[in-house]
Image 1 (cartoon, rainbow, N blue to C red):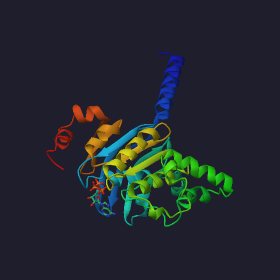
Image 2 (spheres, helix red, strand yellow):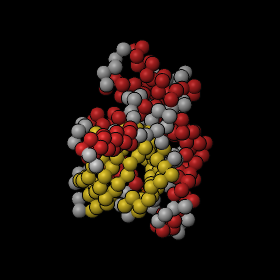
Image 3 (cartoon, protein in one colour):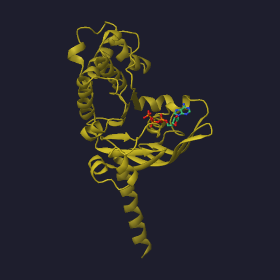
Length: 271
Ligand SMILES: Nc1ncnc2c1ncn2[C@@H]1O[C@H](COP(=O)(O)OP(=O)(O)OP(=O)(O)O)[C@@H](O)[C@H]1O
């Protein structure tokens, strides 16, 4: 091989690498996480694709929420928690190259229990944009409307924007929390069992919403509900005892898993 041929090959490989990263939201390599002496994540390697819904499944205590929280550095707030390995967001190291506050603006999160602020519906959604420095009323009005529309709750709430968010139903509160997360224009939305406290109709609303949102956002969700993962997730990662055992297209994980532990879990033999 001549020098020129080698250089051409290397350039091609570099271009291929870059195009791979274009489709990748989070790239996690050799991630270990310790709560004090206890190791909760063990050598997790996972690439999460953009504009997809990725479900994290596995038995209780296997590290799904812990992994989700490493993505926006929520675990930084836990005393004694230590993360090793690399977590890149669009190629940028989330632990060494971005301030956690900025990271969390790009990576929004919705929790199991809806947690609106004890403020008006409007002020809940306007909270993040105001922190970002948006103060003009017409600009805030626009962001509030856009975010509530994206969260598929504008029509229900548009006539009561200045009423307390605490007066909404659980399902409405959860969609409001999604609107609040979207108002700062994140790239990624993390959902930690976001429907487990909701009734079936509210759950269906949130599932439909997640499918719509993946056109613009990357959605990563922890769920105990295997039917939910099968209904809406493009990709599924199975965790067990702190390890990410298997990852792939949801259909494949549920119908033809490669690992015995995945097979046993999805067939209900443990967990
Ligand atoms: N703040 C913490 N301090 C110490 N240990 C923790 C902490 N949070 C979680 N753990 C431990 O880490 C392990 C993984 O917990 P995690 O909540 O990530 O699991 P999970 O798969 O999300 O579980 P579940 O499905 O029950 O929510 C568990 O053994 C848990 O007890």
